Image 1 (cartoon, helix red, strand yellow):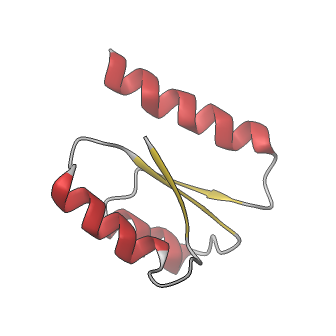
Image 2 (cartoon, rainbow, N blue to C red):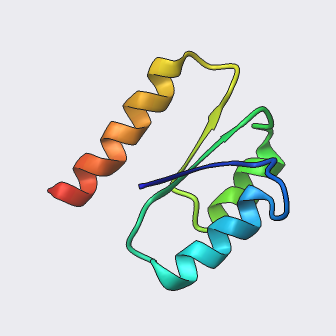
Length: 75
């Protein structure tokens, strides 16, 4: 599993997700961002992001979604 932020230096998280999905399509990608509006969610899905978690949510939400994605792969 790969965890990205939307705002990163050099390349944003959406561009990074697209590049990573091309070389590792089976690896789930999570986007952890201060931006969680519907436009960002749509763009994240189209980039191959499996889950988008807002930084305003409790860290337990991030951990829960990460566990869920990892367990899906392991099953």
